[in-house]
Length: 350
Image (cartoon, rainbow, N blue to C red):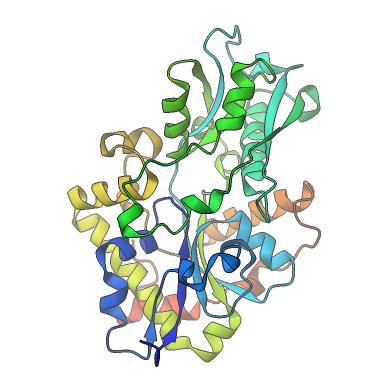
């Protein structure tokens, strides 16, 4: 193994082809006869865990939420986007069970939580909350300045929920919204935002003390339904593409195979995805769209690229990033095109 070049993978604890490939051993099979290995980025050591956000090493591939890669690119990192997926997921605005609000319009003049994560190099959770809450407000005709956003600290280290090994996937996961939930129940804020399968952990921990006021998935405008995990992106360094093209293609091809495996193995896929997201298998359709198994295939369709652009614009307008950049320059379609070709697929494959 020491004579082979590592191409580290890093993934979010959300439904991704990379997570499926990791759990099924597809990476090991795909790279068995190559000059490369695909280890978990945790093997570099705890000092490099922020690579998941910063993209600060050359030999990595990441699949997960869109905001951190956009932030890294805006900070000058020479990364490239290889593919995009879009899977509608739960995006909930929650209030206390006894709150009188009947709709988001009733939150005008009230306090909405925005998380502060001191141990995150980039606070994507704050972006997700702000985007979800402002989208909900817009749908209901409420201007953002008609509410008061309140900072709530989430003090633990979120790296414990990233890139967990196979032996740890069944361990109980910590709720990422605990500080905000405590603030809501204590009356320090009037509403909080929770998205995706992670919101299942929030509702479980709340134990009936909160209720859903609005699910942003029902917003009629596609732009309002966009958030950190809608879309998700596959990214790597330009160095990896230019100097190790076959390895990047092989990884991307494995992601394509994993996406098809999910479609062809519904029972096993459900079990693996539930483990990856730390939820019960019978809760998947609560937090993901009904045809979620069709949404693992990386693509570069115009609509998906536009979705990434909406995130980039929001991050820039709300000062999460200081510098804008050209989205077309960030995309390198060659590895995905070659991966599709090796799998006998056309660019329009679904």
